[in-house]
Image (cartoon, helix red, strand yellow):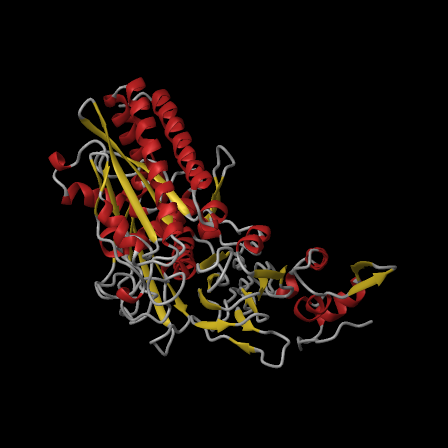
Length: 589
């Protein structure tokens, strides 16, 4: 058994190294998506390709594939592998390019260093790639199979050339890729130094112990849960090329401290971009399982040993090529709620309300800072409202499945919003409004999270490409008497004579002076709204989450205005809440 003090010391060294990788990339990347939004991930893997540290599941999938495809004698110091194929590597979608390098110490393979980063464009039918109308993955962008990128320290230049002639803004894409390579190689050197300090045997023993700890701790807690079997389902908005909602289903069976998740009841795969490869399903599952068991337990590859995942081949949860997978991240909210609701049932708790949908936008500008060049402005719209639970309100204006804070360092991880100043200085665009949407969170004893609105004005012509998750056609549902959240929408030229709402999952041309409003969806509420504490409703009004009219009509809470200061009118509130429940549309003066 590894010495636990040394295990903790080694864990701290590698977690610090992973943070170094992140900031090397942030400080050297070209695009705002990397520098500001930070849509990237990093990992240090064991020689077998498993991640002893929290990381997306695609790293372990890719590490294992490298070990199975390339004989050990063909893996050499200075090599680097590259790819983005979801079916080979478990990636979410094609813009996510992963690079991985082996780490040798005194001739022994001791680890892999790896990074994954979302490129602003990887080719395909529309700027920003991820064409929501795609019926095959080939329409979504350039597919890179897992292959060598560097051979013993020498760049294989044909790969760069292939990328250059298949993407928009090749200098930006290859610049980001170069920064990613630099961060990965920095970790190779630092890993060798750590191994030199502690010894290969000690480091490898620490890796195995770090993989074993989550399974032991999780299994011990899971075996105390009262439930044996639980099922849950969720529905995705009807996607392009498919005229009805898509069903997701899971059945979870507990055998002592081990969980089996069966997604075979989900709909067959569709000729649309909402199919999800099984490794990504497992990654989302581990994230949810860690939170439901004990948030302190790291969701590394070892946690996967506490569960088994099965899915019928040919379904949306286990598609076969060439089914497109570009909107995997948009499916994530419903997939996470599906898993959390099933686990909550096993624990004897109530389900969670549905969260609102977030999305991404991409402007393909035909002009910009440098004459003759085109520019892609790709942004992640982290503005959804999270569904409430039986314990607390949902979070407002966030994307919790791609945002986190490191518990030890308080270091922000995940995708952030690009500052408005960066956008307006780099692209021909003005951001006119950036605000919360009152009454967008579903009313309930516990309120759904509020969504936000972001409005752009184009200063030049562009192609606008948008995608978003559930909640733009089917409103995010509440639970236990809670009401739905407000649906999301995308509006062109709001308030003008030529105003129209953009069809979901689609793209449009914009002209100078046109405005584009992206309004995310709010989270569903939990519990009877008339059971919400009136003082909490007042706080919501003061915070801009609920309007005075919403407080009256949705919650039965009357507010008095005395010299510009709002307070709860207790007598009127009591009368309203004891009366029948017609929706009131106007607050009393």
